[in-house]
Image 1 (cartoon, rainbow, N blue to C red):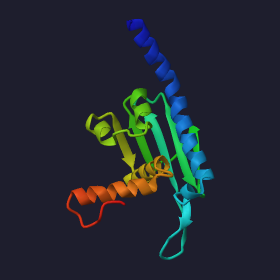
Image 2: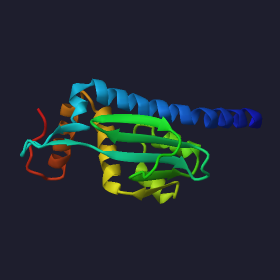
Image 3: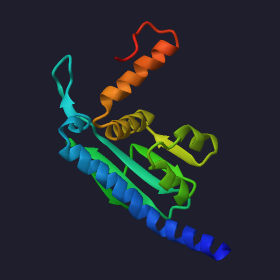
Image 4: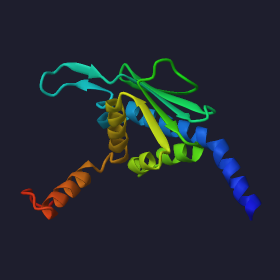
Length: 166
């Protein structure tokens, strides 16, 4: 039984970099092909009409330095790769590959990772917040109306003035 558990961990450790890379690559593909998501990478400011493009460089690494993945946002596109990049805006260091895999799982609890000291961030955390927003937008694609309705319902339960969703 113990051998089976060790075999599973070995397999999980060997496949995690590929799974995380594929997750980031799928995210890049969705932002490139889904029109409602493209605005997160390049759009016009709603009030001024000024065009903008999100530019950031993310490095995802394990603490032991064995695994490095990156995502670069530039010119209205998201590029994903393996290895280190020069001058990342945000670096996320994971305790191990299990934490890295869990971080890229939908519904991951970032706050719990931070409290358990399983992940550390360096750099511009506003870019990290934007990355989290884009990840949520991708997960909620096609369900934005339902999510807005849930927010209205929560406000109603907490005594807000907004009416519950129809």
